[in-house]
Image (cartoon, rainbow, N blue to C red; front, side, top):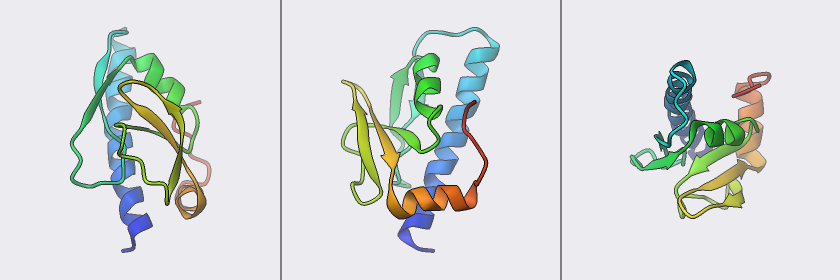
Length: 111
């Protein structure tokens, strides 16, 4: 398994966890900040980012964007498109973006 594949699997696992947190927040009408997992490509990262569910939804409405702790981005596979005090938003590029398209050709994280 190469780096891009390992990174994609790790990011997908955290995206799934975060989607469940977001779904629970929607189901229960929670608007307060919640601890979402960093969606970086480091399999040992257990960092959390406190943001409102609406902010998370805004980020993942863009298929190739991921929520990261500042400094957890990897310029080989993504570019930072937004910087906040507590988090950054990175958009996949190159092979990482192609892998998302190939592995999940029509899947959108949000409508």
